Length: 224
Image 1 (spheres, rainbow, N blue to C red):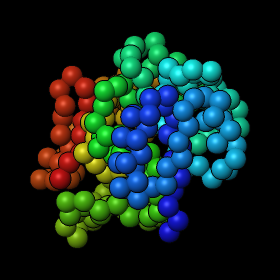
Image 2: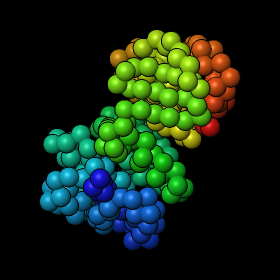
Image 3: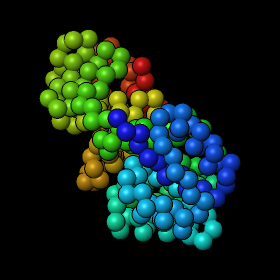
Image 4: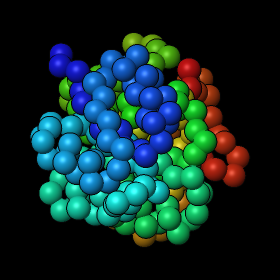
């Protein structure tokens, strides 16, 4: 399988090197850009970039401008890095079509985990139809789930929810993020619908329901 290309855009050389080293170690090819203008040049030249890690505050052209231009031509996944954890910035990012939003300082290992989760979700990191963890097997093609070899019957949303949890194993997911990805922005209720579905899903999973852990005040995390 060809190594997927990731474009890392940041005006701080040390930050670029840190991110690059972790991504290369995880099997990705990394292209670097030190400002927004260089980022766009690289994006148009390469053609096959799988994901972009983009800093917000940069000279010449900031991350918002770069994101806005790229979104006119491409739906390539974008992770925004910012020194500020400002809710308005985060909302602006999601309105522009940003896939993930990470505040500095951050753990490079968590960044790589987010990269892998997004690439799995966009079906770029190997076209695997099966998800396996802790004795649970999700067959996405057949839309079936088995636990320790025994089939369990899930509703469509329960299946999507379990798949999303397993694709993001080890990552804390807010209720809003789960709602946005599993309900695809088209559900106009509130986030409590998540709790109801998780409760039903855990019940059907028996002892394995304990793998879906509650993070109080935030959401959930699937971990084996």
